[in-house]
Image (tube, rainbow, N blue to C red; front, side, top):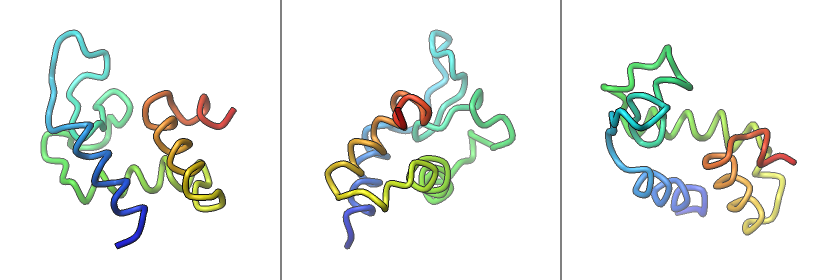
Length: 90
């Protein structure tokens, strides 16, 4: 298995399952994917595979993580997920 797979498993585990707390500004959230950020995604029925696709396309690829050494790529990816892609890219 490659590093990207383990990183994704770690991320999905930490982001957890479904959350619809009234104090969460993201609204309904599953695997860290929020209905506020992804209004066209059926969050309630989101699968891990679909979440992985979103993370890969909108975070890993968008931030060009594959172009960096492993340790920097992990930090960049995690920062993008937690702080937003624009903040991570600075």
